[in-house]
Every structure is written in structure tokens, then in C-alpha cells.
Amino acid sequence: MHPIKKQIVTDESMHPVAVIIDYNDWQNIEAMLQNLPEPSQATDLSSFAGSISLTVDPLAYQQQIRNEWQ
Image (cartoon, rainbow, N blue to C red; front, side, top):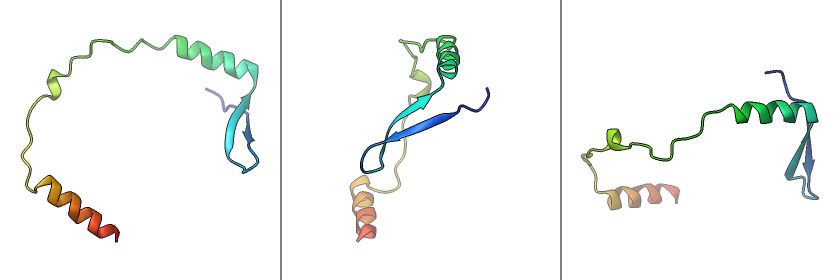
């Protein structure tokens, strides 16, 4: 894919709010998106099932990390 020439539109605070691209670039992007496979609605997550062994109490760890912020 070739580089896309773009213009960033900002608000009064200079925060980006929109992007302007060439119409031909948009058509190319749209065509590529249409060619992507649809995500599966019924994804099998059983391969991720299992258990973990914790070496530290989660609440104690959370308190330790929060104390580092101070």
C-alpha cells in the first residue's frame, strides 16, 4: 500500500478531531476492508481455559503497587 496523504483537522485547543484523505485513497481502504474475513461469532475459547497459581495475594499486590505511586 502506498503512503496516504492526509490532513489533520483540529479544534480550537489543537486537539485532532478529524482526518481528510483523498477520495481515491478512501476507496482503496474501503475495498481492502471489504475483503477482510468476518470475525467468527462463536469463537472457541476452550484452548485458553485453565488455572493459575498466584504467589502473592492480589489485594496485597494491589496495595503494594498503589503505595509505589505515592
